[in-house]
Length: 325
Ligand SMILES: NC(=O)c1ccc[n+]([C@@H]2O[C@H](COP(=O)([O-])OP(=O)(O)OC[C@H]3O[C@@H](n4cnc5c(N)ncnc54)[C@H](O)[C@@H]3O)[C@@H](O)[C@H]2O)c1
Ligand SMILES: CC(C)[C@H](C(=O)O)[C@@H](O)C(=O)O
Image (cartoon, rainbow, N blue to C red):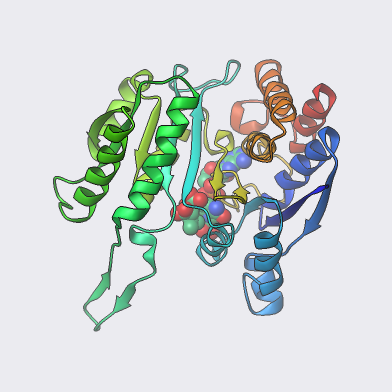
């Protein structure tokens, strides 16, 4: 049966990079593409940033390729991650040959908890002076993430993973997260090394090679993956996979980039690499590898968009990748 892929470009450069990824997906496989609207423009038009039809489309499809939303991002991305039942956000940060990276030796993957932490939705304004946020950490979500991490390192013949946390301050919540993750890893005979997340930010800048897989709570994964993007050539380089038990939502780590939107110069690499992750997730391993290899070749030889020092357009890069797949 043909797999159904939901296509939700969203706002800004999402409208520019997602079509490039769809062309590449279309070139390597037989898929049924169904299109959904979401984001700032959709809200302006319909009054809601995430229409029910789009939520349902994403929930019912086999996988989704998403671009970015603007100011409404939290109202779009978080429910869509929930729509696919995602519990982990896989964010590889890799420096590719040919890209002028601050730290060319970087090759690591963040496994970000994707359902709770400060993203729990429990934020309140209690008075003119006081607002609060409830940070939720459960043993079950931490264990589920750890199970995924153990399988992830096992499949890659790695001995273990780092656990980034701040349990020295958030003793109850990050303490619970750390304890649950380490306990599961111990049960599986997988090694863990703890690192305080603030210290991690320095270590990864100075010596990224020591990190291969980093398991972290939700907000830490958000911030630290953007930091790592800075080490490997910028936000145009980081793909991500929101993985659920069956379904998945694949999106670049970057946002709608209003500063360059409409110019046709956004780097499509992050979205193309997200499409490669989508293919692997659906079981099209060869096709995923082909797309990854094609992107890698184009990054090595050019053309490059302006963020990577070139003068190519998004379409030029897309065409070069299409030529190679
Ligand atoms: N997942 C999402 O939908 C998501 C994620 C982050 C931010 N946002 C939203 O995006 C909007 C802009 O946020 P921001 O400026 O902080 O982050 P951003 O990621 O949109 O842009 C940050 C910087 O990186 C550059 N950049 C990002 N992607 C690029 C690409 N593919 N090629 C070349 N350059 C690229 C931008 O030009 C900008 O200078 C905000 O409204 C925010 O809410 C959405
Ligand atoms: C827009 C926002 C909800 C989102 C997040 O925090 O996860 C973004 O920063 C990201 O990294 O995809």
